[in-house]
Image (cartoon, rainbow, N blue to C red; front, side, top):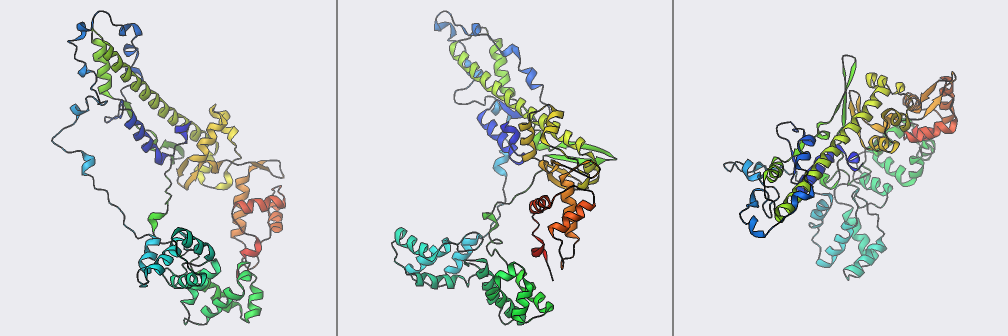
Length: 473
């Protein structure tokens, strides 16, 4: 179950960890597993009687156990496979490192240009350290004052701190060290003063009509500033060009960049869907030849002392662990293929066309029954895996949805209803956006039995704001 939840991007690292812990496990270089589970078979599973020792210790004096295991070196035989004429390939690799200046390093560099005395510089450093990754100073001035007093034994007044905050607000990127979104946008507009009347009006809108602007009460703004639709459009264009997160575009190394690595690939080959696993999900693992040879040598030996017994038990333990891990990886592959193959068959029409309205209602139980797997197992796969298709990359849980009935009694996927709802909003007149009530009526006209509260719920799930906030000039 744990391996099943490991994303494809992390599976290789998980395998490397296992190989570091268990030297009996290795990656096959020739592309064959040599029937790993069959090759290490009962011939090595000696009974306890084989390890009984009789007679004096002298009878084992001539046995050289170094050919079975070397003390302090689990990976016996590895040196025999390495060509000393060539260096380790890993040692010769030069990995390029992307060098960037982080957001806080950029602020610290600008701070060094202010020529402050040591005490004032420490206060300024405390302020800069309180700025979050988005560029906002969300800590109260009184809290910064307390931090300075308790941590650095500096008694600074709030006025002194505010004075430094104002200086830092002139740093790049524009808008940095703002306490609120309103202040952040205004700081950016102040730097544009002198660029025309729209900038001046935009400042007035944010200073005096910020709440009305966020709620799109444009008529009140127009009456207050005595401007027409064209003038308001110019003001809005000035504001929407501003950056609400001034620190967000600086210092990419400080932010986790999410790259989706698909677990499956589905292609349409002349009308026939073909499913394949990402090769990272199917590593070619095998049991180390060196360890297998050591067991064979032990098995062929006639005299076996206690030290040999301990060595061979250790080897067998490592090989058993390697066999278990290989079987677990194979079971992971089989489970992934089974679940994805069943989903592909169930949603065949979507994978052929890419049309979301063709998605069938499907719940975890449907796939669990067809694969003879537990619902929790199917859930683990659906929540953590991605499939790449000709129409994009999707998380598997995207294909699961409840059903909704139509006037004719037919069951359709709620995903289909959401797609139609999304298309309606996209095609609406932005001057007169469709209300939830009107959207409900349109869906009912199309034959979907749906309530207004359900439409509102689906709209929220699609991150579509209410009609008033969708209104544009």
